[in-house]
Length: 418
Image 1 (spheres, rainbow, N blue to C red):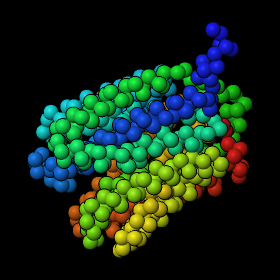
Image 2: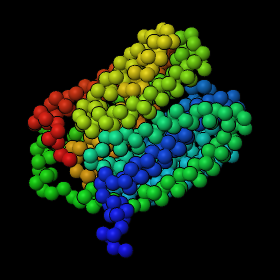
Image 3: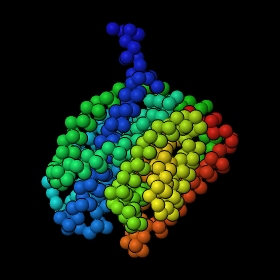
Image 4: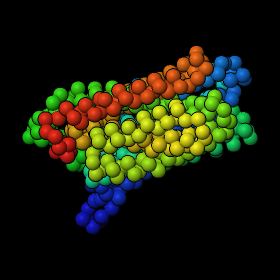
């Protein structure tokens, strides 16, 4: 059968095709399953502090190690994806997550657990499921790039809505070791088949080098050099991720500290995460209409407003309102960065650039809980720590607002390089 007689074969190699959505939703599935290793910290490790012989302050170290490992590994994985495509990194990431979780199920040495989280679950595991998958998805879309990025970027938030109750039940019924072992087996048998859905050749138009005229036009659009534009995005993502990660880790304990129960705090966190999942798709539509930079500024503003609300609210209803506003805001932030990079920079080397931004975002995600937790341990309240997060969020808004206002020689952002 010729290529002309086989529309499926023809569509596989086109942007915005049916196969492009297979790539997007397969990437979503991989990211959602891979994110479970972060929620296992709260569900399986934190309740085991006595058995593991660690302090409560140390219990979040695996989370931070995985975040930093994911950021460092993401740069390399993004570079590999640029050269070879996402299939190899996705296979490596899936096997590493399964192997790491199975190894943790067999040990009780907390130091080894932290190392496994940083190396197998972070640098080799989730690192392969963020930058490579996001950058690859950007190459498959043009008309619906914002929605596609939102779909793939929803993996962590969707994991936050799905994994905690499942893992809590399993851990309560069968214990720490069984919980990690079951997750390892589930990851292995579900993630590997999804990886094979990513093997299609990228659309030719997505990997061709930009023409000299296009590149000159794109460079002239910036007031600052393109590499400085990437640096500014890396600085900005640290600020929004510091603010973002504080409630994600400390919200249940924060609710307890102001007179509510841990259970009410956990439900509040679930409502926050659920609102972020729903909002993320809506932000994708908005991003396709107004562009990544304006969408990022708007979403980051809502996140700051939500964090202010969480800091000053003293009633449960107000906490829910603030939490939902926060969730709606943060749901639109992270998917904007790959879209921005694809909108304003050439496709060549996109995975490496996304990997850089993911690295700095991971640093912010690791710093946020540490800042809030250590300030709480020192002052016995979360307000000061949350104020530090609000300040970091304002720095993010200042950078993004400055890029929008002063970063381009022409005022119309829709004239940017595509």
